[in-house]
Image 1 (cartoon, rainbow, N blue to C red):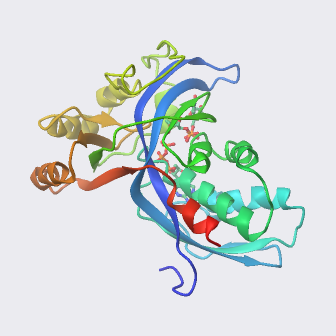
Image 2: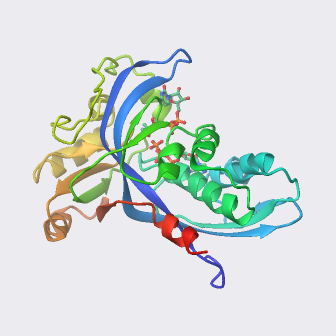
Length: 285
Ligand SMILES: C[C@](O)(CO)[C@H](O)COP(=O)(O)OP(=O)(O)OC[C@H]1O[C@@H](n2ccc(N)nc2=O)[C@H](O)[C@@H]1O
Ligand SMILES: Nc1ncnc2c1ncn2[C@@H]1O[C@H](COP(=O)(O)OP(=O)(O)OP(=O)(O)O)[C@@H](O)[C@H]1O
């Protein structure tokens, strides 16, 4: 699907290991505090610069108009800051991350495009400048540019390093699409969790997701998947759902649980990844 002669750039998914809503911002958005980690479920992109200013996506994503695709929007946004309208790109995307599941795939694709084209077009924007651009595309984009396990504040753009134990997860995709705006607008959504000024893994226990209860109430398929996973531990939802995950101490434990899950759900055994896999690729070029 991607051209074989070009590099394949990774674009990993994320999990919100914990997500609390601590209030609302003046613009109506919700102020969050969240532990984000990268996982080893990745989309892949090939990106080749062109010198005629055109940005062409050769692999349109089903259900997304090419000009609305976050890869194209990211490239156009960076082009405005490149100082040259000649900057163009051919883009190929191989999607493996389910869309709209709370795994941040589209945001990750946008971050990979920003990081790679910043390099290929020699724009020389620093990480903070890329984060400031990225947040215009989506609240999860800054985390993927930060590229390490993080504690996030604001809408997700204020990031600090955060230590977590290495963990393995069973990830399950319920057969349901949850619309993020609908959950943020839900009348029963809790919006008053206390802020944690000095978060640590220990003082965040027990981990939770403030969006989870309203999603479980309103989406029977997510509730059914949750009950099934709950036979094996304490599942949680990532982002605004619908994907659910269960922490496991070893990969063998994750595989044993996955083996017992009904086949009607798409499932993965995954692990957290300490650093964005793109960083070592770009620093070697
Ligand atoms: C749930 C998370 O995935 C956690 O990482 C993110 O906060 C989602 O952020 P996002 O991808 O930017 O979400 P979008 O799908 O673009 O947001 C849709 C709508 O949700 C609402 N929204 C989003 C983020 C936020 N912090 N507060 C909000 O109230 C806004 O009305 C926004 O217009
Ligand atoms: N390259 C892309 N990949 C995936 N989705 C895209 C892309 N470009 C635009 N979109 C749109 O963005 C929406 C959200 O996609 P994404 O997979 O990032 O959401 P998500 O996993 O629910 O993230 P969140 O953690 O924000 O809830 C999709 O439903 C799709 O309409």
